[in-house]
Length: 186
Image (cartoon, rainbow, N blue to C red; front, side):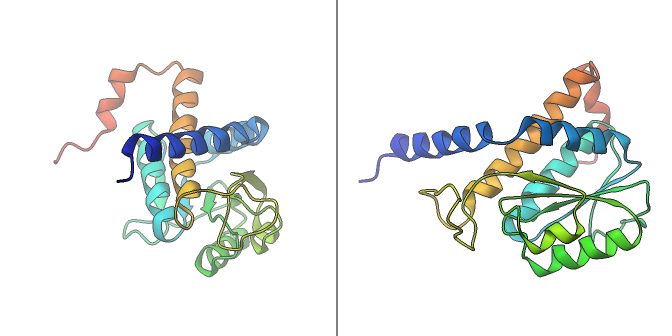
């Protein structure tokens, strides 16, 4: 029988190792762009999109106007806005198309991914690297015991929560006051 605690420890260790390798200067740039933006848009696909939706929701709890590309209430993007693209490989078609379009409207684009030399580089103003294995299996990627790109999606979600905590501390936000932004029709 497989031991739960052993599997859990491997995953936690992978996450710790991965997040420790994220460049803090890149996170500072990301935070600056989020704080500067009028609206923050998110695009990704699959499980990456699920992580981005959670990040968008958390930032909305902090009073930031966030939108996930494709949602029915999505407004127009402008030069005052930020598009955050989540794509480990940086080669997924839908995020590439959306990033290219966002640049036509002079929005700032930040790519959070694992592959710094991807096609997304042509449309990104900044890149935040989560150094994990992708579907491309490049030689400089950190390998994982988990299936497919689980480590990227998990790291992305925790990176979003880390950014939220940094913002709370930076702005000296009273945590109980955040409940005013929480859904209340549930």
